[in-house]
Length: 201
Image 1: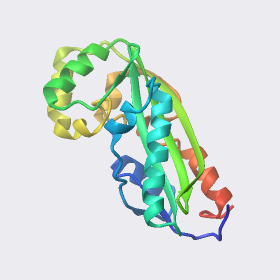
Image 2: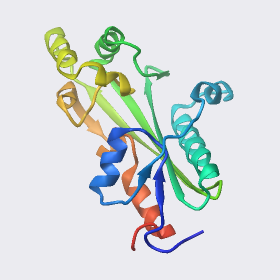
Image 3: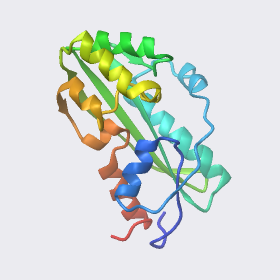
Image 4: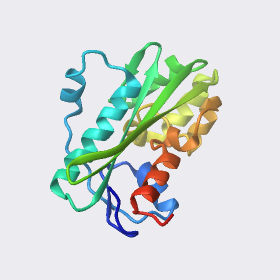
């Protein structure tokens, strides 16, 4: 399924980071966050694999918005974090974020960023990419300073950090694509947008 260059693209995500990535790449789009019950979707899976969950959430978001606007291309995206053998959700408070970051320091975790493209209520493409991040053994003083500087904005991030800001100081190394860490496997998405005609080849 392909179209003419310049066809409409809708981002089915309210993520500021994803908006910034697409805008920075000069991709024309509008935003319409999907209405997906993530809890119900998770409960419907017999085994919650973090990478597969990111992919399933991205697909569900793309399809949800596509059913309401079948003539547009719809990009859904989601991200999950795997740590210590389990799935990590967004912290509900700064106190919980502090505990989370203190537990993760000096250790590795994985971020899985899934994306999906739909049109006319049908899934056209989907993919997921993974990055492994190793936090440094930062001090309690740095952790407190970081939380004070970033504030409640961290509660919107699954890892309670933003790599594109002061959060870069939390890490020793990152093995993987920078855009994947931010929440979108941008290179594969751009390739697919070119393939279907949203972007010029």
